[in-house]
Amino acid sequence: METLNEISKSLHSIAIKANDCLLLVETAFIHNSPGLLKDCRGKLDSMKKAETEVTARITGLIRENPDLRPYLEVSQLLYKIGDHIEKLLETVNKKIKEDILFSDRGIKEINLLIKKLSEIMKTTADLFVIKNPVLIRYIKESEADLANKTIEYSTMHEERLIEGLCLPVASPLYLTMLNSIHNIGRDAKDIADKIAG
Image 1 (cartoon, one colour):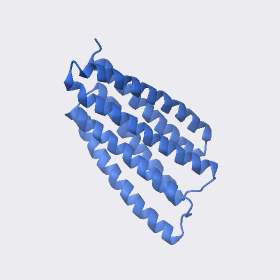
Image 2 (cartoon, rainbow, N blue to C red):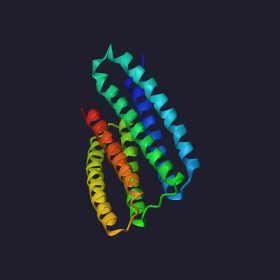
Image 3 (tube, rainbow, N blue to C red):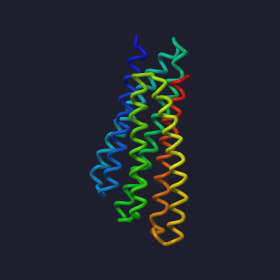
Image 4 (cartoon, rainbow, N blue to C red):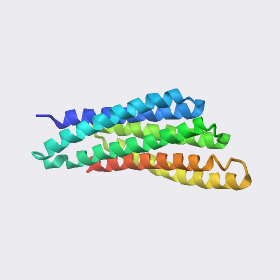
């Protein structure tokens, strides 16, 4: 019979793919590179397939071990993270295809947020194989900081928009990216909560 350790390794692998994809989106955003978005799309498809498979495996194990129920919820949260990354990918793709320019400040803010989010995702992946309270605390504190930054950046963006420092056409894309980043961070925190019990 499959062990929790094997399930944890599968979840770790999915979280690593999510982070890899996130970094591809960031690089595509910086360099206006649609090819990297295709690479990310491939990773997302692989990630979602793996998530569906691990969910089926966990569902089978829950019948004999109801204590594994939180891992089913964790698997579903990873699927949601994949959906949010897909939204981020689509937004960056639109920015590239329509040649929409972001202000230098907007680019720096998105890059900073994705770097913070990547650290959260790497730590979340590690949490599946090293169930350590220090990692859980790091994820929760980092997510709270990320959430505050997305709110702060949204407010600063509105001020830039009023002052005419950024293009109105870029505004919905920037705000969609902030929202996707915020949602990924929140889901990672929820994973940490489920693992913490």
